[in-house]
Amino acid sequence: MRRAAFAVAAGAMAVSLAACGSAKESSGGASKSADTKKGDAIKVGLLLPENQTARYEKFDRPLIEKKVSELTNGKGKVVYANAKQDATLQSQQVETMITNKVDVLVIDAVDAAAIKNSVQKAKDAGIPVVAYDRLAQGPISAYTSFDNETVGKTQGEALLKALGSKAKSGKIVMMNGSSTDPNAAQFKKGAHEVLDGKVKVGKEYDTKEWKPENANSNMEGAISALGKKNIVGVYSANDGMAGGIITALKQAGISVPVTGQDAELAGVQRIVAGSQFMSVYKPYAPEAAAAAEMAVDLAQGKSLDSVAKDKVDSPTTKGVPSVLVAVTSLTKDNIKDTVVKDGVYTIADICTAQYKAACAKAGLK
Image (cartoon, rainbow, N blue to C red; front, side):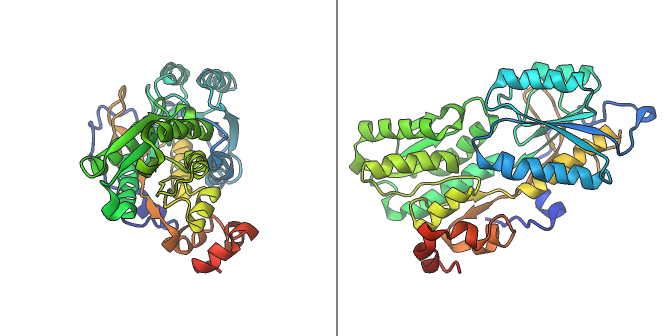
């Protein structure tokens, strides 16, 4: 699996994806005409979906705010709101942003379909929308995320590697993400492409709201249904759910490979300790930088041609100008060369007292 280079944003972000739609179909033009171009004193509305996953408050928000400031000589303002996993609240937040006359919106949708009418309202008000991390429906002007099917494939390949000759000796449990998140469907599709025919899936769940407690409950149900001796591994779509899954496994006295995603600190620590096999490292800096750059360009009435090299189709919009960022399979062997090297965490962050011995064994000093 290719490693994403954090520092070389242009290379890391230009992951190849087959072009969908044509330039004529694209909604990528700025909503405001050339004669109403703004200077640096712009307002960027930023709507993130929830605050349970560590990445949104720790990485995405501050990275986007910093990049917008850099691109606007400190004059651009980010107006922020978090929907706390409530799609109705997020729709209300869009209304508020429209009332407050932001120049552009960056939206990571709680529910990609439910946000469609709100995106349309923003467009009708002359406010372009950048879909962030999740491909929102409606007339979006731009999109940035990761190659989500590749994420699922990366997880599936890692799980097969961890299982080795035991791949068909029992059954795996698949703990997918929320059914309201289009990314979850893409992760699942990619994972199935790798795993189908090579493992036996005993139980599979779409986990409501990505919540660790829901994953924990589902895992307890799977253990009860399948029997603890028959489970050889678990596909978990992200690190938060992996935490809930591993708690259920430990309580049942089961030790099997578990996947993850997002390289959350707790997930990295579990990888060091050996209770989680891997995560998917998604470098948020280039994703956030792309969102900020596209948002500023749209607010200022500029073309996205120099930023967005890909095109993606949503269920409602063809040829959306897009930036897709590469991902890396994160295991115990490359922690130092990925999240530590890129400054996401320090050795001290990871190797707290509880993990000192495991860190030393893993060469994290």
